[in-house]
Amino acid sequence: MTEYEKVALAMYETVDEVDEGHNVSLVRSLVDKQFYVKKELENYNKKIYDYLKETKNIFFPIISECILDDETPSNDGDLKEKLIIIEEYISGETLSRRIEKNGHLSEDESVKIIIDICKGLQHLHKKNFINRDIKPDNIIITRTGEVKIVDVDSGKEINRETNTDTRLIGTPEYFAPEQIGLGFHSSDERTDIYAMGIVFNEMLTGDYPKNKMVEGVFKEVVLKATQLEPEKRFKSIDEFMEAIIFCHKNHMSFKLKHFYDSKMLRKTNSRFDTKSWKLPGFRSGNKKKAIIAVIYYIASFLFSCSCYFPNVPKDYKFLDGMLYTTYLTLAFWFLFFWIGNYRGIRDRLPLMKTNNRVLYFILSIIWYIIIILIAFTVLAIVWSIIEDIY
Figure 1 (tube, rainbow, N blue to C red):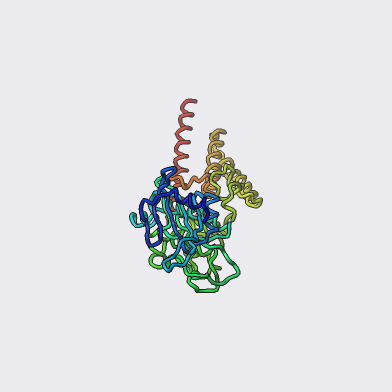
Figure 2: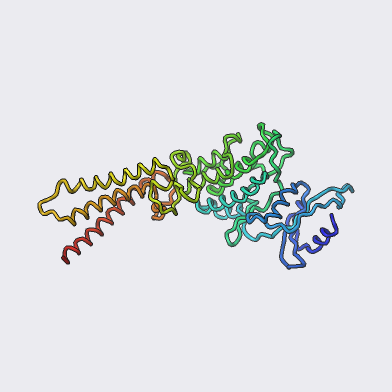
C-alpha cells in the first residue's frame, strides 16, 4: 500500500459495523461528510472493481477507492493480502425485502427490475466478467426507483479454457450446476442467466421455480434460463432480455418469436416498434410483407366497393355510396392495424394487460367489435345530421 493510499483511507472514519463477520462497515468521509460502505475482501477479483471504478456504471455503486493491502497481519501473524473497497452507500430497499413485503411483484415492476439488472450485467459480460452471485439480497431499489447491483465479490473473469470453477462461491439457491462442479463447464455468462431466471420467477411468484413455477407467457423464459445444461439456456444476456421484452410487449409465448422479425429490439424498422408511424406491413423492411400489405389494402378497398355499387338502389346517392365504401374499407384496414398492434393500440385499452393468452385474444376481438360499432354509430349520427341540414 502506498503512502497516498494510506492517506486516502485515513480520510474515512468508521460509523458502524454493518456485517462484522464479512468485514463490512459504514464509514463517513472527512472531506465531503458523505456516508460510504467499506469492504475488506479476502476473496476478490481486483480487475472487476478496477473496471467499475473507472467506468462508474450506473447499475452498480460508485467506487471511490480500490486499494490492495498487503501489510496487515492475519490472526496467525502472517501477512495476508486483502482488497479494501470504499464504495457509494446505496439507500433503499433490497429486492428480497420488497418481495417478502408484497408476496410477489407485479409483471410491470418485475420486468422493469429484471431489465435493469440485465443492463448492468451487459457491461460486465462485454468485458469478459461475470457476477456469479445474482440474488434479491444483492439488488437494491432506491427511493427514486433505480436498480443497483451491490455485490460483485464473487465475480470473476471468464476462462473458456477450463472446465470447472477454481472454488465454490455464490449462494446455493441460485447456483448454476457448473458452480458446484456438476457438468463439464466453467462459469460463464450463462451462469448469471441461470440465477436471473430464478430471481425473475421469485419476483413474479414469491418463490423459487422448484417450488412454484410462474405461469403464463414468462414460464418458457424461466424454464429456458434455468436449464441444467448451459447449452440449453439463453446464449447471452441480450437474448434473455429480448425474450422478456417480447413476452411483455406482445402477451404471447417466446415460442412464437420465429413468426416475427428477430430484430425486434432495433429502434427502427422493428416489427414490434410501437412508436413507428410506418403502416403495418412496412415496419420490418421486409419486401414480401410490404407487397402482401399493398395487396391487402387494395383488395379490401375493391371488395368494399363491390359490396355496394353492383347493387345500386334506384334512389342511389353517390355520397351514400362513397360513405358506405369508405367506412367498410376503413373497417378492413383497421383490422390490419389492430392485428399488427399499430402504435400499441391494443395495449392502451382497459383489461388488455392480462398474461392469459386466451383471455387476451377474446378481449382483442371484443374491443375490435366495440370500436367498429362505435365508429358506425357516430358516422350514422353525423350523416343523419348532414341529411337533415341539406
